[in-house]
Image (cartoon, rainbow, N blue to C red):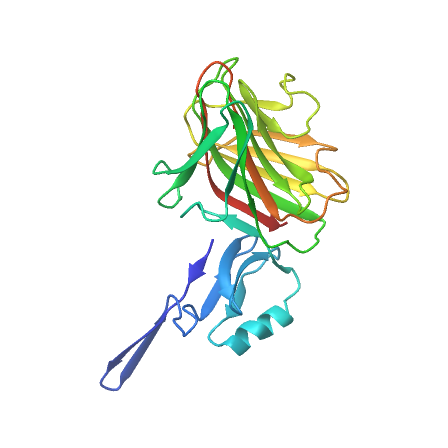
Length: 278
């Protein structure tokens, strides 16, 4: 995970002790370490960047000066990828509510957050007993990569026929859905999977409990691998779909989150969204 290192120098007679834990600089942070397989969000060259380390060793990034930051970006080590989407819902800035049926939906910040989350999640609730709609946000377009990883925390109010559907989608700039997750009346399944009623393709969702959904999407082969973890970090479900990633879309640049209710008012909560090169 993200680590900061600050240089602290303690001066005593004839003795100088230096301990590295994060390094402060004019840019705020002067050095980053990225462990193998991890991603972090950093401000480099004046822009927020998602940096993903696909190597088997830790990457050091010197960011003390603007020149060092630009040098890193212009000379990326092999196995380091730049670009990605991150949303932690510190605010609803940039999100647009779209009502598609009946009284629609409403979005608001909520203090109920998943493990490791920030101060807020987003609460997307149906308006009335037949509301349907979604919230959408555009992000800077990611570079073209063969494979992307989509991570999101989700929580649903209740199960049962007529209660709710939810959807969590990664799209390109033209609203083409690359991949994502669907929530049915009783389950969660990979978007585009063969059958939501086939138990080999869905997870019987937990009621009112946070779940971490992870999806690996290959835009060359269409192969999609989905994993679901409970709030304790235990893997509770995994599935593979051979053609659930759309291969004709552009690179990710949009997140769409939705909900729909029949007969009762329903809500989904979402938090800690990441889309990174894999």
